[in-house]
Length: 219
Image (tube, rainbow, N blue to C red; front, side):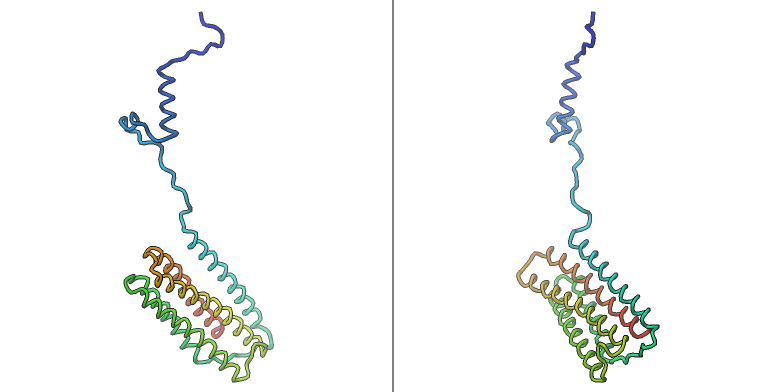
C-alpha cells in the first residue's frame, strides 16, 4: 500500500535527466558526442554593425539635419525684400572639380590596396587645395565689397561654405591620421577599416558641396 503523497523514484529516469541537464549546461560529454549531441548552439554576441561605422552614420545623419535646417531658413529668408543676387566667383567651379577629383582618388585607393598610400596622399592634398580655393572665393567676394553682413544672401553663403569647410577640414585631419597609421605599419585590416570610414565621410562632404551649390545659386 502506497503512502499518501509518496513520490516514486525511477533511478534510470533520474540519471538520464541529470545527464541531459549536464549536457545542456556545459560542454558535451564524451557519451553525448558519441550519441551525436554537440552541445547547445553557440551564442553570437555583439552588434551586427561595427560601432565605428554606426557612429559615423549617426554623425552624418546629424550633419544632414543641420544643413536641412539651413536650407529651410535659406528658402524662407529668400522671399524677403532685401534679398539680393550674389555673384559667382569662378574659383568655386574649380574647387568643385578639385573636391570631386579628391573623392575619386580616395575611392581608387580603397579599391587598390597595394597603392593606397599614394592615392590617399593625393586625395588629402586635393582636400587642402579645396580649402585654399574656398578662401580665395571669400577673398574674391570681399574684393567686390560683399561681406558677411552685406545682405542675407551673402550671409548664408559665408555661413554655409564656412560650416562645410569645417567639415572638410575634419575629413583632411582624418585622412592625415590614416596616412600616419600606414606610415607606422599598421595591419592591413586596420588600415582598410579606417580607409572605408574616411572614404564614406569624404564622399559625403563631396555630395554635400554639390547640394550647397545647387541651393546657393540655382534657387
